[in-house]
Picture (tube, each protein chain N blue to C red):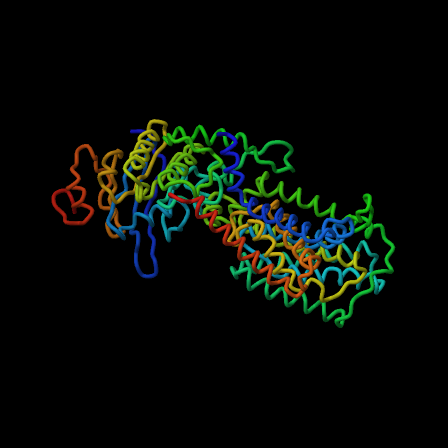
Length: 253
Length: 327
């Protein structure tokens, strides 16, 4: 077993009187792809938002490489090399691909006080990245995001995660609203990410997609973790569905 | 093939429509009135244009960041009042008065930014309030009377708006300052990291913030910039016309915003162009000048301005939709 990358311990989160997460503990290892499943309202998104800094837990700890970290906002999460790709990718649609890739971490050239963007470098890196994430069409890096399709936008967000060498990439419903080929592109990316040493948490409604790529499946139900070592190679989709919906059979409490 | 794609990109540029309009305007006015391109008339147009133009430059960056400022006209009127009142009352030399006026303007911009970013009040309401506060202060401290400005003998007045001649053209130094500001702010918007942040702050502030862009700082800085540049424009104007009138600058805010959006900057933020703004300034100033020259009653001016705004907005939205067809 590889080293542990991230561990969330005893996470609780309330929204008013509703307990969205109830003492959830789980971990992700290096170069591991974890699928996070659960029905609507099971707490998947809440859990992920806590890890990516969009929400704060009411109690509980987060560890990276065994060290306790404080993730108060999305900038902190990115600082811990946790990158989140939402279904509606957080891109600025008016800006070009290259400008989005480097937003917040722009390369500069020339004297510091000139604050001058190194646009050649940005375009060059963007061009290579687009190729790596499997955009075959020749899209110039200065194309605004608004001119791209949903899948292409997703790819740009993925390219950004790859370039800044995030250790943990969270994909929250990345295949929603995507065409068949674009979905294959995202799944291919997830497999490649593992090979290049990244870890992923993959959230999707579509269990078939999850089964195709993940090493391990964690299931949440009503804010509680009900399974966390389901091996997709030795379990059937029907069994997992039963665990998700709580129609308990063998092996489930 | 290459030329065709170059042309396509040219036509798709937000500055293209305004540029065609400006060109058409020059052709029509020149054809109808030979005096339009005379040295005297060009000198006239170039006297006031830089003063209004400077405000539009600040406003362009601010609107690209998704905010706007209705208090620019009031600051334009108020800053020279501060400077000349301090000077005329023998409280401070002119240079110090100038600095005090600029600092107060910066504070007004800061206050605008603070209300908008910290209290999350829309900039429309905040700067509408500030418009009234600043104008009211200008009227109150002067009792509504203009301040004398012709007694000053300071090199500062020459630097800001000194007059010189090129052939038959009479040029004010303010034109050179306007060009310099336009070049600097154009560079900031398109070439610098700050420009990337400005566009991102206006385009998708949440996404920008998630990437570590300091959206609040960026907007705050732009509110301050807009107020300071408006104050500078107002001081320029007061020296040139030899009067600091507490009412000057009234309703400039709307003309300035009109110039910016005609130039192709998006009202909702995310996209802005300094070149387009300069073209927008020229379109409206030439229109005001030209329709009088060709004999249209000056009172009809607003009809043309309104028509231009509606026409350009229709063009921009049509280009936008065509550009995004198929996505």
